[in-house]
Image (cartoon, rainbow, N blue to C red; front, side, top):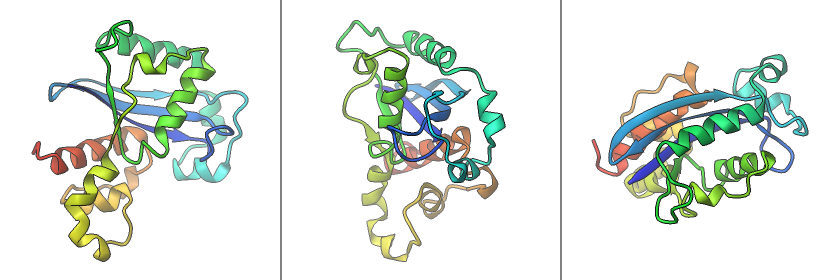
Amino acid sequence: MKLFFYDLETTGTMVHRHGIHQISGMIVIDGQIKETFDFKVAPNPAAQIDDAALAVGNVTRDQIMNYPPMDQVYHQIVGMLSKYVNKFDRTDKFFLVGYNNAAFDNAFFRAFFVQNGDKYFGSWFWSNTFDVMVLATPALAAKRAEMQDFKQATVAGTLGVAVDPEKLHDASYDIILCKAIFDKVCGIV
């Protein structure tokens, strides 16, 4: 099974207004981590930038505007994907895996491909996804009323995963938490 664990940091919460400034994750094939990645990316020039969103990720406008351009990062991502998937084989694709990705990240990631002139996102990824927030629900249903919220850090902590609050909202750290939660709730560890 080919899993594409990923997390995004964005310039806001609206996919048609905001853009991506960080894409991080890991490629896991048949349970083995094959590759990790952390791409900083200048957001789409047409994207609006919400300073509150940048504050969450602890980055500035100047920082993100000096990241590599999105077309360069897009080509790096496609190059990486091509090592593991034949986009012309309808039976060879990744499952997207993320925390709350079905409701948020997937739409931004698909839009990133479209913004780079690529309408074949589905050639790389299955349409169904592993949303780790949803997967964690049965494991924590009995404790849910005692939990302050169901954010990734809270879920990780409740499952016994160590969380460094100083590193939260950096996609490269958040994906490590996501994979740890996935492994616990899927019985991998």
